[in-house]
Image (cartoon, rainbow, N blue to C red):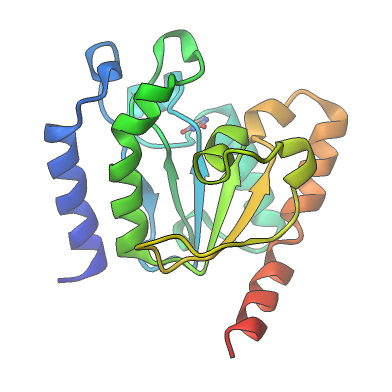
Length: 195
Ligand code: URA
């Protein structure tokens, strides 16, 4: 079976089976989107208002900023895969609760197992802390993390500030753009290590 088909089946299954409480208040599920053969998977926090309305991740203001940064490094949205740790919009965009994150966790892990990306980019602390609970985003952003996880082929991770947090904060915005520009070099570094 092709990876795209596997992802479609996975999303269909989880949309029916996911026990996340947010399902009750959200308009619809927002599964991952993009290339199933992507080298990079971006992981955000949770869908916002526009994503909830359209059923697609990162289509609002943060998504527009993300698309601008992808353009700077010569990537198109179609080249990458983008998903969230929580697949349903929390009411009023509040932070997802621990039990909501764990209800959607297996869905995320299964997506990653199908795609097997070379690199996982965390957009913000929620995504990073899902895998590295002890790290602070202010310390870890823009640094390549290498750690094998059981049952996962990807061992390279790159945390960034969340585009929504950086959107209206001048200095954080600059840091995020500079970190983002490191992604092509990070991919080269991974290729060298994997020889
Ligand atoms: N912020 C996120 O973390 N995810 C989205 O899909 C949109 C905004």
